[in-house]
Image 1 (cartoon, rainbow, N blue to C red):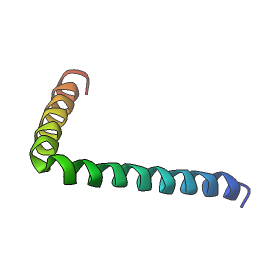
Image 2: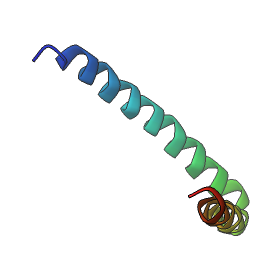
Image 3: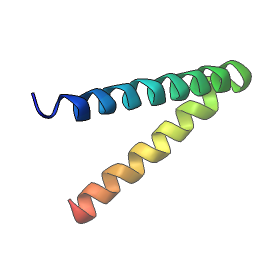
Length: 56
């Protein structure tokens, strides 16, 4: 129960940041379409896999 204020602040910060990110993503996708977003996800995912193979 002593950690409840810390957990509450963390929850609120995560909620607010999620709202901002989702809003930005929806605006971006509505303007540019899913193509660029899809390629970006593939590149970032590939780089993440390479990083895991090297340093993981």
